[in-house]
Image (cartoon, rainbow, N blue to C red; front, side, top):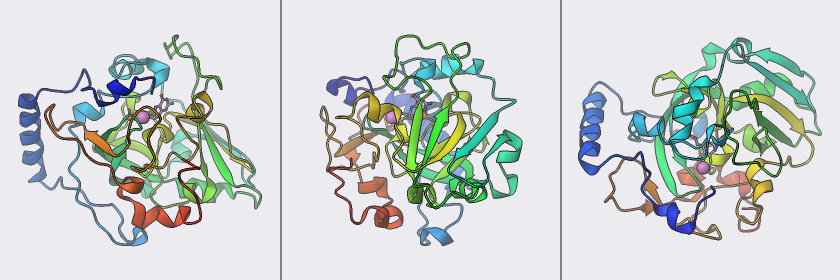
Length: 306
Ligand SMILES: Nc1nc2c(c(=O)[nH]1)N[C@H]1C(S)=C(S)[C@@H](COP(=O)(O)O)O[C@H]1N2
Ligand SMILES: [Mo]
């Protein structure tokens, strides 16, 4: 996010050469014979449009990260986040709702609702991945909280514990913790997921253990990690990046090839793991999820509410 326009197209330091990339691809294809081509876990509520997506090599998804609490370089989170203690873990649900509560992680996550979902993931920095997440619908925990009629948004906070989180260079204008938010109807959409795992395993700390949000039609910075609080509000909650640099990052942050970042185009993206010589591919409106979520924005000027 703190990048120069030229860097938006840089090859990440951890990205592998085309040769080892080829080997990784082979490894993946080997695995897919055993059934690794993943479809939506649950097609019915999403308009029955199964999508075949080839996951990004796992070592890239878990080794090239943005998690600024652990450092600003893409390799920092994987190097430092092992220090994060993810048990015990408490999640506070509060604000405008009938059932505020402090949950232990074990009570917050209902194992029977956990499913695997493979989504495209598009960072505002113009790189992208395909990740097989494991999680449950955000809507489940919202319904359980019984939001009041006045609740129009839900705000999220990441843990902030300087003892465990070594980053000292970056001080968000809004202050820590990292904050995000969604309009309530966005949050209730069946595509919005609370992830507890990826690639069939528990979520690595650098990817936001033990619980992070995934909103696949929005830029990656909406997908807040290591969540400790959810608050129902009547007004749009302040969020980290939209407060930090309001001319560059908005509250909505819907993936949109027609709305450029002031310093780079969002028309194309670089899929991680395709090799350094691979062409950038076109970015799709709402990251390819227009059929599912387009109606949420029917009456909005998405150039204004970017
Ligand atoms: N708490 C917190 N959540 C965060 C971030 C962060 O710095 N801190 N970075 C965001 C950004 S910019 C992206 S692209 C994704 C990256 O998720 P990944 O590392 O699992 O790919 O996490 C998002 N969630
Ligand atoms: Mo991002």
